[in-house]
Structure formats: C-alpha cells, structure tokens
Length: 392
Image (cartoon, rainbow, N blue to C red; front, side, top):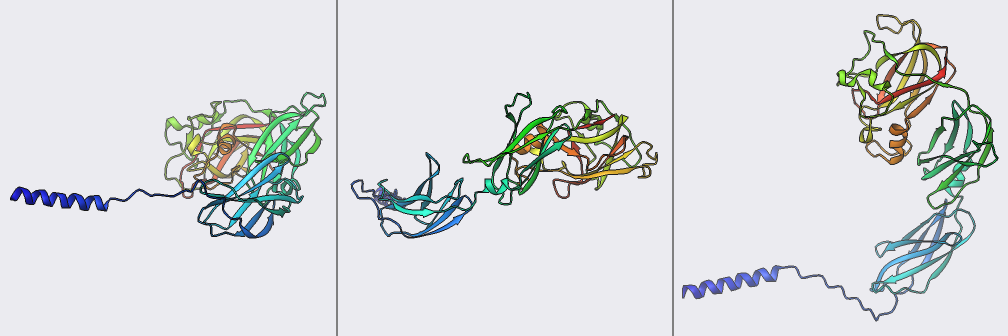
C-alpha cells in the first residue's frame, strides 16, 4: 500500500513539473499569405545629406518591418529599415541637394514585399559640403597644415595629395579621419621646396567635396639630435623610479619605456630638458603612453613650454621665458575611455605635433610644465617620447 501511495505522489509531482515548463513559442508564418498592406500618410523632413520619414503603419498582423530603398549616388542603393514598433525611417548618405525618389516597402513575416509607396525627398546641403566651406591648407614647419570646421561632427576623411615629384601629378600624401567639430591636421617630413598641394573631404558613403588646391613651400626646420640630457632642478618632479627616468623620453622610440612622475603628486608639475645646444624651436612632438593609456589616465592634456639659457639653480622660475601653452587634440572627439584606431595612431604611434605660437629666441634648456592630464584628478604624468625641431 505504501509503495502505491509513493508511486501516486511521484506521478502527481511529475505532472505538475511538466505542466510548469514553458511551452516553446510558436509563431505561425503563412508562406502562402499575401504581402502586407502599404504604409500611409508619409511626412518628409529633409535633413543635411538625408531625410526623416514619418508614416502611419497598417494593422496587418503579417507585417514584420518597413524599409526604404534609395540611391545615394548613381547606381549605389542603400536601405533603411524600421521595426513595427516605430513609425520613422532615417535616410542618410546623399551627396547632393537634388530631389530624390525613395521607395517605401512593407515586408511581411513571410518576407513578401508590398508594392512601394513612392515619395520625394530633397536633402539639405550634406555635411561633407558644409565642412568644405571652412576647409583650408597652409604652410607649416616641415610640411603643410589643414584646418577644418565640422559643425555637424560628421565622420569625415581629410585627404591630402601633393605633387612631390614636381611632374604635375598629385599623389596621395596622407589621410586623416575625424568626427570633431573643428581641428588642425599637419603633414610633416617634407622638404622646403615649392610644390602643389590638394585637400578634399570624403564621407563614409563615398561622397567627396571639391578640392582646395594651393602652391605652398614648407618652412625649413632641422631635427634636434638625441640624446638630450637631464637637467635636474630642486623643484622639478622626480621620476617614479629609475625604470621611468626622463631619459626614456629621448631613447629614440615610442614604446612601453616611458617617463612617469611619482604617484599622488599635485598639478602643475614640471621637468627640465637640456637640448645641449641653443635651438630656435619650431615644433615639438610628443608620444603618449601606449594603447589603452592613450588619451586617458596620466597622459598629458594641457601643458606649457618655457625656455632659458641661464636657469636659476634654486628651481625657481627666475630666468625662464614662457614659449607657449598647448592642448592635446583627440581626433575622434570621443569621451575619455573610448579610443579609436585614429586616436592611437595620432596620439601614440605617430605622435602629436605642437607648433610654437611664435618664433622664440634660441634656448638650450626647456622646461615642460604639465597643467592637466586626460583623466580628471590624475596626479601623475606619463610620456613615451619627446622630439624637437628648429634652427641651431
């Protein structure tokens, strides 16, 4: 009798457990059903290089999503899709302000497509053309400098070509990528001779601006030879340890071998470099710390350069002259903690260039004064490599 009761109880428990199990979802798709009904009441809002389409959804239970098909450039089609939980389609990538036809389709769960609803859009001036209005190229020390305003913060490529061979053929020189509202980009390593330069903008859909073409002569400068020398003064910030000495900044390579000041030291803080000869500085290049540290933590965001030929041995600022104040630039414009390939190339791999705001006197001793780092509250300074150019 007891065994019979136990068996009965087990059967009841098993039945309850099985009943509580979630049944698999069954979505019935009628492969023989027709295409869903079209959307209606479409309203067009034209935007720079695109448009926003608002519409009324039909109540067809077979509807899966809505899509728009349009041509961004001749022969190049693009699609924009929106689920049944939205009544809006966003179009982008147009390179002109000419009127364009857009086809709006309703797509069923069975992937059958309705007849298109045809609408006309007339995009506003595209971002690549707006930015072109404030695009310029000018001479720089050892190269040329491009200035751009990009008020819409569009993702743009800045393409610089040059006739370096002097045969009348413009060839690719360098391409920068940016999404900041304004910026300055410089190509270096060019000889001081007259040549033709061209710069134009390209967006991610292949739309191109007109080109700015100029005949320019890069300004002459020489590389200040390394190694430099450490010139310690009483108020200078000591290195964290011998492994993070100042001399790591002029070992000739940007690597994991860096200068790092002591932890928990307040800003501003500074160190002194002996260039060994008086130099009329034209520019300085700074490489930040490698990879995930770039544009973050204790990498330098704002600093000053000071020059002297007879610095006071007590570490005071007597005998020093301010050359300029400088700010680090992040090409992507993304917040601290977000890092792009362009950021790493600009701030670490290639190094960031800083031109002197005016032509200073020739100075042998340079004092580097950090006023801010990329991480708020960071009380340490790290630098991978420093280089200088000028006349001497």
